[in-house]
Length: 356
Image (cartoon, rainbow, N blue to C red; front, top):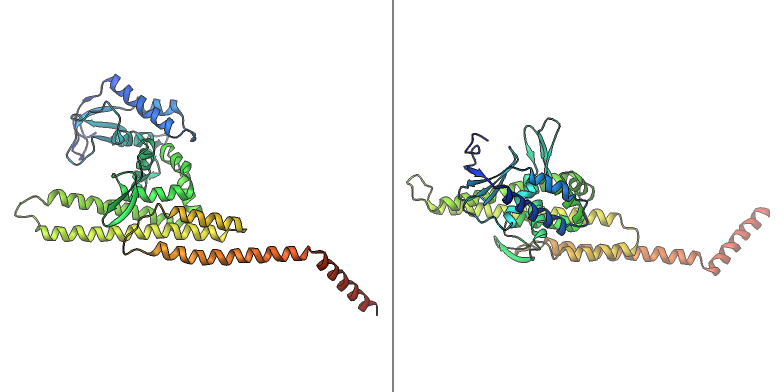
């Protein structure tokens, strides 16, 4: 904290601590929802409960544009708007509580990780990736329905209007790699999800995904700032048509980055998976997985990369199946009784020629 009543340059002004009974109620709701939503993950109810119970929580004046609940990593505290009803834990409160659970510190008390974020003295890596992961966990915990959203003229399936673009990318990764490893890394703060991405998609691809999601979030925040300021009539304001032009530029760039990221994910993943197939059954399993994956991706009128990839993949799969079938036929032929007799005769003839 900068002082007793403010938090650095966040604009949040502290009013007073939450009452103990209110904290206990929030902790109960969040802990129970986590354990109910993810029973197959190795999560500890007592650890979750204790961590949240020990978390300082305050009422505060929250600036316009910020959520009604805010986790502040520099002092591991959570701040709630004094005008909001917090008796019922919603997605926003839950989201910030997950951030608190994500903290991992070294022996000196310095934060080293926040979920899938890597924190060091000079930088915080994978910020957007972590935000998307937390929102994915949140929507799963609240059983939010999946719906098709029109975002910047892209049709994107999403369970949330809060970070929908980057959360969609995380949803794709969770489907391909498995949800459990994502939940584990997001709540328990470890590298397993990152390692799985590197193993199955590639290290350079992981770095690109991390960088691209950060860029999407940055551009989205710029658009939000412009739209908030566009109504100002100050003489120093940039004319609105120029502001609209900047918004359009950002939107076009977000679309490009999103589709580039999506393409890199599925092309690298399915190419790597296809290179390791050993039989016809595995080929057909990959074909079905590619088909199911197609229901999760974002699309647009001017986007055809996925469809073209599926056409090419289908041809490769047919060729690979034909190869396996030919090998299988050859093995059957070699085990055929007539074939064994012919081989026996050939060996006898070669032996006779040597004797002669």
